[in-house]
Length: 224
Image 1 (cartoon, rainbow, N blue to C red):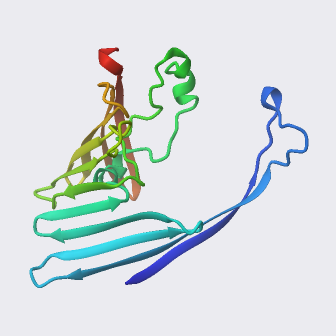
Image 2 (image 1 turned 120 degrees about the vertical axis):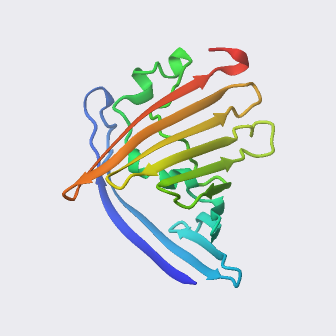
Image 3 (image 1 turned 180 degrees about the horizontal axis):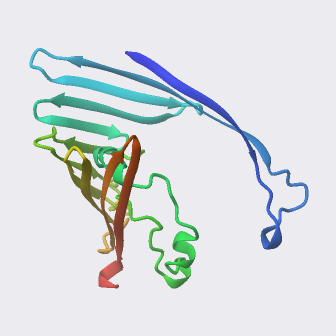
């Protein structure tokens, strides 16, 4: 078993003015900390399959993510509450944690218009949700992956999510297309479909990437 980790402390300061001015005696200053301890390990069996496991403990003494993996000539299989397979393959064409200015609140009507579209079209992935996933090996530059999350067994846990991705690495550039579909919490037919297409390349050590996507939300019971 390998043990690794990280720890950081941040000083945070915020001051609000104008219509959102701080109330009296609000300092707006605070120290924030975050830490992780990662336990991981792997072993290769006589049949050539490599079995691995990973569990991450955060500074609040809670399990942040965990997974098991199986690797072999067939590809890569994972199961657990961890970043999904598709999320691990689309990083070359996504903007990471970028949230557009004013996002869903003004540009898309927000909740006041009954729309509430997402502020990002990146393919969905819920790191803390249990899931299974599969990724092929690279074949002539092509690679594919799929991930599936089950929302749960309750009446309001119908928000299952399925995502898939196909990439091609031509050497001078890499391109990809990803898609995900997330159902409503109830069985009313509502769902959110997201797609992402993009590429990445580099010149003289400078990386260039671009991603373009769409997010479509279908209303309940056949509504727009």
